[in-house]
Length: 293
Image (tube, rainbow, N blue to C red; front, side, top):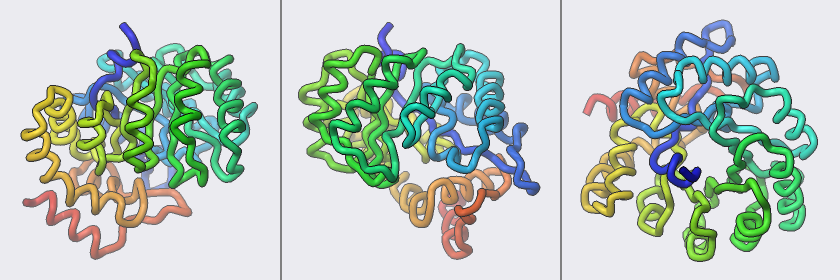
């Protein structure tokens, strides 16, 4: 079975719960993963940006990956996020993180350096040559400062062995359609924008790696499955109810928004690590109102 088939549907970029001592809250992580899986999502993504990876130590990352495997217990696939702006440091992470039980690696493009398109190609070419699992590209220019254009994505998809897909979060619908038009038939293309997921699925994407599905896994994954079954009338009805949640989750910061939802659902404590701060009071009240309607 191809990665395109294995990871079709909803993946969840899992948040990292912290306790009141600013330590990783592993019981809460276990509770969250069980909540997500029991509500029907197709796979788990650990160590994504939503997991606050820039403020996790190497030891914490290793512990989180192992705790995630234990909580998932092979019920669904697990994708591990490993990216960075130092290509060779990413290779070290491939060696140092436990990847035996991973289905694939999701690797965000380099941030801050702002490499050229050729630099992005060479970066991913190097990573793919040594990645112990299939590599999924992650284009998120809002965080990295550099868009990977459709031509570069298609070149990587066609020319580089072991690159199996992309999480596309440029927000550029034309770019998404260009990738979908010309990518290889077995190349996985998933959305990285919850609020754009429905039209992107209509264009032919294979699913979504979602933030919102941490807190609303049943509602979001039902929406995605409806769209993947070409039932866009049902998909729209479900998505219309989710739009206010998207707005609240991304109004100030990710994951501060979704952690407010998860706090109200009594899954974790409302703690984030600096420089991120918790959702402001007025928005938090709106989260409570949304969940109570």
